[in-house]
Length: 198
Image (tube, rainbow, N blue to C red; front, side, top):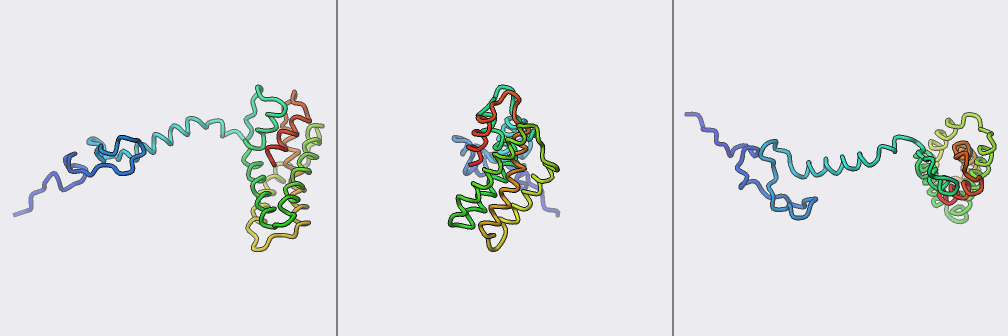
C-alpha cells in the first residue's frame, strides 16, 4: 500500500497556523504575521526588499547622467555639486585622499593640495575655452593609475605621488571648467568645486 500524501508535507501548502512567524521583520508590527503568502509562497521579507529597492530606483533616475547640473544652479553651487555628481571625479577625489593618507607625514596634506591646485589651473583653462587633448581618456587613465597607487604594497614617495595627482588633477579640473555653466562666475564656480574636492 502506497503512503498517502498529506497536505502538510509541503511547507508551501501547510496551513497558515503551522508556519513560523517572521523574525527581524523590516517593518514594525509585522513580526506575528505568517511567513508565506497563501497564494504565491513569496516571503514577506523578499517583498519588503523588492519594495525598498523599487522605491530607491524610482528616486535615482537622474544618476544615469554623469553631470546633471540644471539651469537652476549657478556659480558656487554648480561648482559644489559638479565633482560630487560625476562618478569619475568622485572616485578620483577618494583615491587621492587615500593615497595621501597611506603615505603619511606631510603627504596627507601635500598630495591632495597638489591635486586641487592643478585642478584649479585646469578649470581656468577650461573656462577660457582651452580643452586639453584626450581629456576623457586621461580622466579614465587617472582612475586606473590612482587605483594602482592605492593598491601598491608600499606608497610612492611624496614627490612622485604629488606629481602624478597634480598631472591628473589638471585634466579633472579642465573637465570641470569646460562643463561650467555659461552664466556661472568663474571664481565662485572654482570655489565651489575646490570646497567639494577638499
